[in-house]
Length: 485
Ligand code: SF4
Image 1 (spheres, helix red, strand yellow):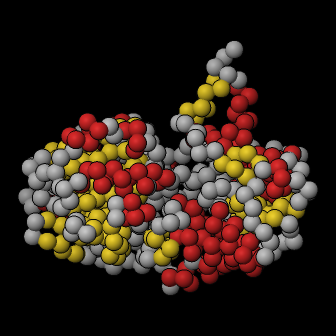
Image 2: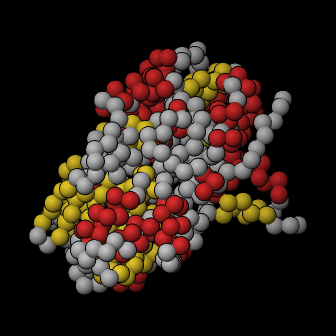
Image 3: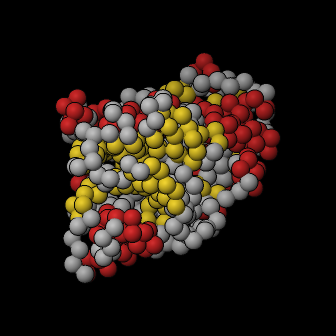
């Protein structure tokens, strides 16, 4: 019998892919160990590779590997990461293929000395910049967009590192929360639109910590101080901490999908609790799109909190009707090609007692291609659900993201190419409803006074980009056709 393998991506392919996590710590005797912990707590933001670079004020020490944090770093490797300053990165590839050489943090030697960089986001003009530099003779070591930043610094002609960084920052466009490490500096930067989160905190020993999400502060016993502001550059060295705003001011466009799906619900990002916002979205859904039913169940885990909100607002009991396996390895080997059809079953199982004979409301946070949702609905029907009503705690996803999230292309997104009725028919649900952009805004934007990117729901992009044929955004998704019947 022919062996056949399916990857984790094919099991989970109907969700947007998380982007990356960054973590940095300054002036801490256990810098690398705390970085390890911080990365461990942010594993959900990237599972392809993980890396740490530390500094003892003379050298930068680097180790990176493919896979999960707990598998990449051994005790020996950690012991090699000396010094009181460190940065780390968990990667999911939005640009650049998944190879070890693309693992971050990047470290290069230059006339400015050694420089290391960890990037969360996506530069929308990296292809253009890279082509130009390659024509001028630059040789890139990786295929990731972030490497253009260090090349721009090295080619700037400046002899001062901060001036060289200033030159590079004036050239790049798009989404970037960055941590830059040199023997002297730890620098944290957030792009002027503030697409990706970046928080700053302090530990009791006085060390300063940066992270993509505050869940990394809880595990490292760090007290949250504030967000690094959109367009802010925070520079730490032996003289202390300084803050600069080197960019012309832009209207912020924080990624609203961070609240809907990406960030951990126990984190605070963009100055707000993810749990609170996600629950708000569920409540809004119940107010605007009610349906008579016996039970509310989430598609775990990302829709759990929205489903709690829906249940609280509607008074319909919340139950765990689907159980998600947390033990799916990177590659799942099965001895039959038919296993591809089992993708959703490998990840989810139905609690028959919860749904049999019931009118079920199933809450999810997004539908990309619809393939997994369709399989889940089929499983609920087979387990005896009398009616299945699907409610989505976000508007229909109709456009890809160019700012660091891997969302399928326009033609692959079911909501971009089909009506609500066609999608409901494909999923085989009794009813389907999404939040509108306005109601999402009420739940999220009103909360914070505006300033969010919602381009994947509206197609209105706050920062211009090159089209994706030029390689800005890697899509993992395949063509598909809606099956009839
Ligand atoms: S397009 Fe969507 S996923 Fe991308 S930054 Fe904007 S809101 Fe976030």
